[in-house]
Image (tube, rainbow, N blue to C red):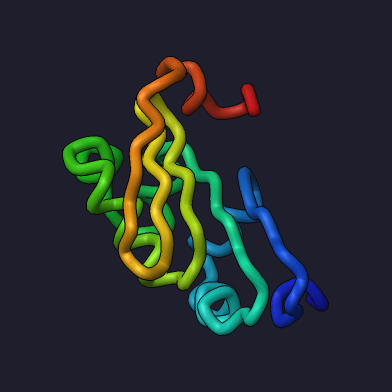
Length: 108
């Protein structure tokens, strides 16, 4: 609970992302944090967070990462081949290294 509203940096992955996706109150608390926050979803987690399908995420990974970063006011690393890094201010970059295995659930 202290991490939700605190100023300390926070990295969220895996089941934390699933909890946030299922709870609008947690989404609001996350967006209101004063500390830097990073989310590291794979495409299924990103789809859950945005309420869309994996096909939508994969269809435009840059737009999905940008939307997620803006909506939750956090930094996003959308994992996969060509991981997409998005900031809350809309800046997006792609890491061209790596493989699709980086987005496989449970391998992190």
